Each structure stands twice: as structure tokens, then as C-alpha cells.
Length: 252
Image (cartoon, rainbow, N blue to C red):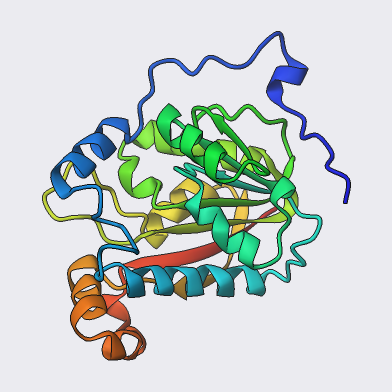
């Protein structure tokens, strides 16, 4: 399949939009990994992570299946892509790498993504001002980005940009935590009400489905390490223990 270049705002204007000094989540991530250690979320070295990751991937797969995607000619943009790991699921589902795009504010994580997945397209950028033309992508994806976007105005700008670059009638998948960390100013839950305010107000999009992902971290990490056989049993029996939901929206 021929790789058709994706139009950007740079193509339409006299240069890319200024990214300013917005640093959504940037300082938080530095402090997080400094305090928790590099292996906090390592599948290889931390047994607490495995079933949390399996639950998230299963929910994303079900979400993609629900929209009837063929995975062949659809462009995907991962907003807040980090090192590109979230896009591995789309590769496994059959999406060709040249149709997978990612944007992240942190330069180091983008360099890592480019090294790991040279056939994909990654750029450092501000999620509040995406450097892509309107109605470019078939699927917009975010994974645990809004939980760290606590500013109301900036969060709305991100949501508006995600909607802007999505084609009418196509979809957005929000993979995020519905509960905030108690007592933390660096977390803001992406609850159903918050999703409605950000994406559904004014009938810009409609909710198509919600899928259960990982359990709340203290329980999910414990079960993943100590009692993996009970993980999905509890996920099914006690939905209130599910901390992360995957929500599918369709742009009107």
C-alpha cells in the first residue's frame, strides 16, 4: 500500500504553530520515575505489571473491534504517545506501521519511539496545538494522558484538537483512569462526566461503547503479582474495582 503523506498545519500556514511553554505532565513524569524507579512499569522486571497490561490491551482490542475497523487503510494518531508502546497493539491488530502516528511533548520519549519503530511517524509537539490538518485521521487514541492533564482550559484545548483532526463519522478511543489518586494535585480522573464536558458538549461526538480495563492499581498490581488466577474474575464480578475504562466516541 502506498504511503500518502499526511497534510500538516505547516503545509497550510507560514510555519508550525508555536508550542509555547506548555508542559502538561512533563515535570510530573520526571518526578514519578525518579521516585518509583525505572522498572515501575516494566513488563520484564516487575511482576505487578503483567495483568494490568493484559487487561488494558484486551479492552483496547475490544474497543477497536467494536468500531468495525479493517486496520488496512486507516490512519491512527496516538496523542501523548510516549515511547510508542501503545501503538504496538495496533500493529498486532494488523494496522500497517506507515499509518501509525504519534505525538508527545517530551523530546526524549519521541527519540526513543523513533528508534524503536522507524517505520512509524513520530513528532514532538504540543497536544493543545496539533500540527496536522483538520479531518486527517480515522482514529484518535490516547492512553493515560488526561489523568495528568489537570488544567481545565488546556484539557479542553486537547480535546478540541483531537476532534478537529478526526474525520467526521470516525472514532476516538480514550484509554484512561476514571478515578484520581487521592490527595494528588497531579491527577484528575477522566470520569464519564468529564468526557461529556470535553467531547460531547454541543453534540460534537457521541459515546459508542465503554470497555473495562485494568483494576485500580493497588489491587490490580497485587493480584497480578500474588494471585493472577483471580485477576479477571474480580474484574468481572466487581466492576467498581475497575480503575481504567476504554471509551469509544464517534465524531459527528
